[in-house]
Length: 147
Image 1 (cartoon, rainbow, N blue to C red):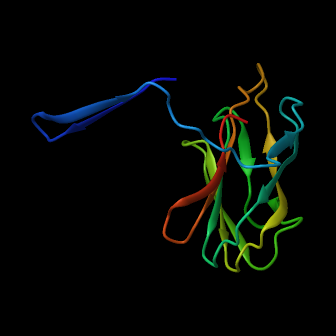
Image 2: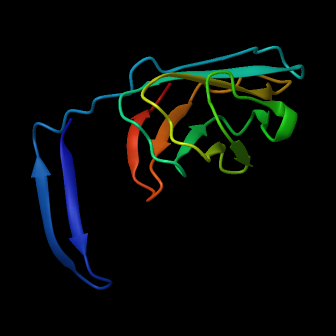
């Protein structure tokens, strides 16, 4: 794919560039999202992924999901499965994303957790999910897009 970049001030173009070859993106390994797609019946949405680096305490895992789905992830609706230590979940349904807040570091290796989900009654959700692992400074350290 060809990439274009443009630098602008509030009133004028300062510069631009083009890359004919594009850039190589290495997607997160072992990323998967599984869920029951029975309309209007709540079930589990399971997330699995493999991290290659240790994530410091205070890091986050962000999951993007279709806004047509209903997600519950606080308290008993969150199942840590392979996550250790204190984990809380914030859900942003209008944005179609949830965020796990990790109190302890996240060790490299296989990770998994589940939340409660409900698919819409009419039609199936577009299967557009993503997983981002974000360090305490807000930088994405690993990700898998368009799952």
